[in-house]
Length: 174
Image 1 (cartoon, rainbow, N blue to C red):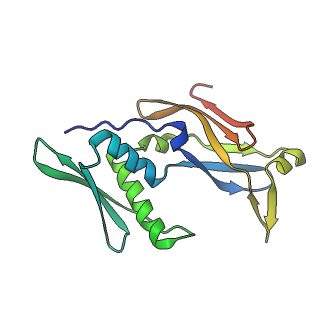
Image 2: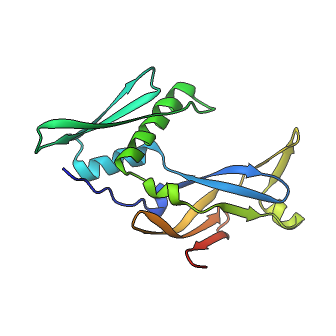
Image 3: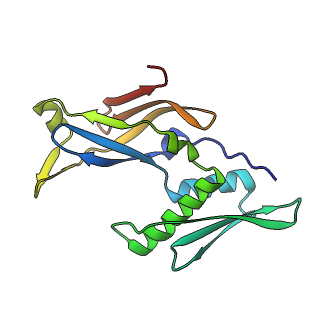
């Protein structure tokens, strides 16, 4: 049994603001648990994989049926709680991390450093920066517009904001 999981598509990758200040903001790329479920169903079949949570949802085991060996093959990882729903977030994170162990979305580990400069007041206002207790935040959403992946490595990436403006471009060699 050798499953090759396909690369993630643009609409399966989400962006989250990691750092924000008055000069720049940085983004992280991530996938959500539904993506892993869909790719597992698509690649091995809905009846040929299963998940188990142990240690109060801290660890997730994804098992895939190996027809040649007539046994379940498993990969496991641990997660961390989310800020909004701790228990659900813990289960989801451990599941996504176990999915990475199978190779689902592993290309995200090769993402470039995504830094968007906020050069002037107009650009800052465009991103709706808000300072609360000395911390900045934004209501702006960011979307992966295009991604190019070669051999499980991100070689090209463009990100736009929810107003449709391209705010980040990356191409290997440029």
